[in-house]
Image 1 (cartoon, rainbow, N blue to C red):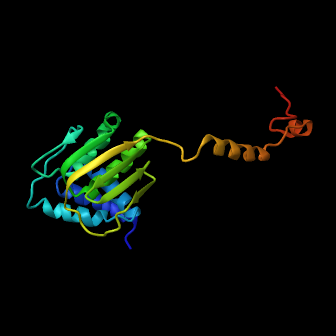
Image 2: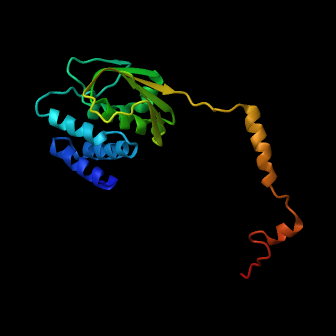
Image 3: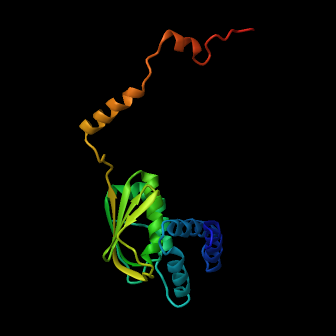
Length: 202
């Protein structure tokens, strides 16, 4: 099994080799490492995408709006870099659609990292596949395939407002139990506390 460090390094160099800048190549290396860590076929999709660059043109999505459309498939890497760069403004849109996105799996880790930047969960949908990106800590999905997705007619991105999974009563009950660990301060504890008994020799 290849190490994540090897995957990162080789992916980065391959990205530069097909024409991306070193800066973008660095991002791709991080992303494929992330996908493989989460058990998603990042390297497989990237390899297929790089092979397709020899015979097909892709559109760079540099400015993302509420609805993004193109007759030429969008490059998932440049689209992802743009999303990550603009995410603090994009979070106000709540719902974003990108039509004709090539290799959407490669766009996914940019969203995962964006989730951490804005401190919100992000949902990502295409075809029947749903992904929930949790602050770049994990990816929940109904996608269990190891196949290559060459194109998604419509992808949908939603920013999810943060909320607690528990109510105030449950929190108060748990907090009350936590107070059982508190120790009442006594004179003996005061004397033995850090700094107690020290004298200034100056």
